[in-house]
Length: 360
Image 1 (cartoon, rainbow, N blue to C red):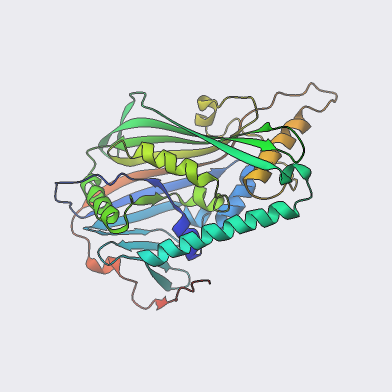
Image 2: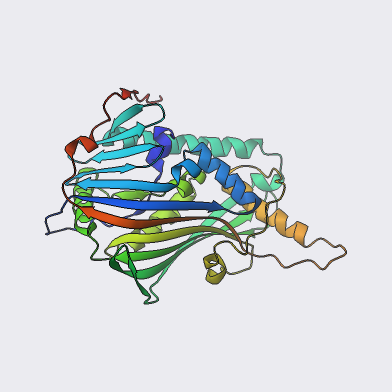
């Protein structure tokens, strides 16, 4: 189970806190998740995800229970419980048979401290980096686009409409004493099917409304694999938040969503069709070369890979291509309507409490 700080920071793509005048019925949502990693960089991200609590054990089946202003999501590793009226989140570890309880105020404080710690760590790593290019400045430019192609489908018995969201994050690097150059682009591409009439719509609206009133911002679903993999890169936060604002404009709940992380070499444009081929264009895994940590290191990795591909040899150099690092698909299998036992929103009987240590 990941640390409380990691889990707090894993609250990603937003669900809009739209007001609801319909009485929300208790629902139980059954879903599956499949996360895949591609290429050498992808395998590195897969290792990071496993260290953060993701990986094979966290994939497959999950169950979300909703009742009023309470929500619980379970998978093989543990559970996360939100009780909005009590202003509390509970994290359950099934393996250790333990749980941790935090107030929303403690969550906010821990998230703030974690962000500060990451900034210090990034600056320290930058100062210690021997590569002159790493000591320069990195400027991130964000662009979010949304496309509704009009595709329709039935998922879990409900009507759904397809939505494409592309978050482009371009990195311009200025090595120490040199001119600014584009390092490449990192793309978060989301292929999502949204339903306005699924059974859990009213429940999610009411929960999100109450959560927004309590903490002053929208409730955000967890994108466990992606956020665990990128938890050490605070630069990504702005792009994710921009996407959340766009997503909030579209009412409904996600019934199927595939998120792709794609790297695009400098001076090339993102090809959506290649991403939708589910990583078919991604290079095979090769031996990894150390290129530093964080987003800066990954961007330099793209540059080095392109340089290696274009070195002279017996065969003509292949042109650089975009590389899919990972894809994560979550799909709702079924939704049950009916009362949820209140005990589901309390720590399991026999589990011991682990106190949260707030670092000073």
